[in-house]
Amino acid sequence: MATYAIGDIQGCYDEFRRLLDKLDFDPAHDQVWIAGDLVNRGPKSLETLRFIKSLGDAAISVLGNHDMHLIATVISLGKTGKKDTLAPILRASDCDELVHWLRHQPLFHHDQGFCMLHAGLPPYVSPSIVLPDFAIAQPTAS
Ligand SMILES: [Mn+2]
Image (cartoon, rainbow, N blue to C red; front, top):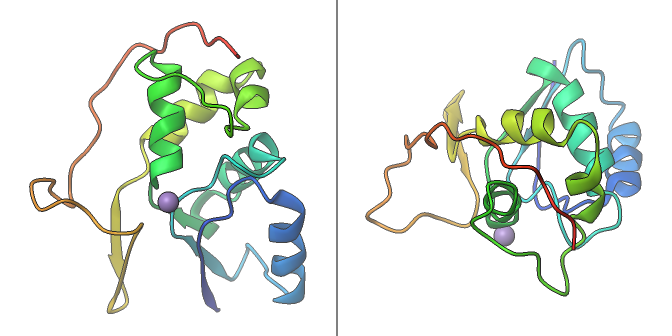
């Protein structure tokens, strides 16, 4: 069993899959730690999100700022920006399911003597913070 850590995939699904192939990653035996920013900027955020979710316990993810931006957009607290590539997620039939899964990912993970978080936390935010439950609004793509 091997554990890999990969950060900032940012929707670069094809490259992520090629990297896992190069590593001979086997979800039945290996684990990949995803250090946040699964989505946005790259061309295939939807595919990236679906794939990482499908890995189940073989993937451990923490939230990055782009993931938080997606969550905020879906619950209508944010607007998509010019550089965002989140529209396919917002239009997807499984958007609510994907964002529900995403929002249950932690900000901080530690195991086996290692810890993982995306880019740091302001001192007033607890690493064990859990996002509150919210009703997912009808997503709108811009
Ligand atoms: Mn980031």
